[in-house]
Length: 139
Length: 132
Image (cartoon, rainbow over all chains, first blue to last red):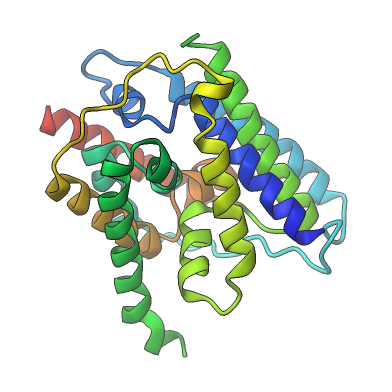
């Protein structure tokens, strides 16, 4: 059951990206280009996703545990620190350069493989660098 | 592309995915986090399954919806690699990307995620303006 839900969630998420054309970096860069020929569609995507998401959190608030698991595992961190700001800045610069964030990057492996391959190889290398950097600290 | 209908339906589907996942499994959907679990954690099966679903759904482009904006002509590998390294490292250092901070984090009104989203949106907007 866990596996089916996970697969369905992935499918729906991917369909959402495809339907809104957020899998296409040209559309994403068009949204980020607020000083040029601005395409506001990503705001609509984010706003409708967040509106539905809020219903989920409202239901969560009324339940002690999720339907298929024994406890909630929603992030509990609240601190706003240098890592959050620097990490998000680096991510934003990388996102602006290509128009790919991790989800659309993964779909580019199929939709646009000549780009997706280089982008995702580098995403994995970047995540790996952070993982090996912090692995000893976390232990 | 219908500039309102398609993004609206796309966003509703993304929201539905996060709600189904949250209420059944009890976790948020963060693609960068799920990807690094698939690569570096001991429990790789479920993250891999999620990613497989995402790739299948995300490549249903021409089947479900008309592709109205052409994909870019293939850009230089160097540009894509620099972008990917920044996205990979930055999302891990900052603890999330457009899905984890942007959609799920704002849905639960997390101050951390709201700040992160404002920062990465601003950084991306400035980058696009500078590179143009």
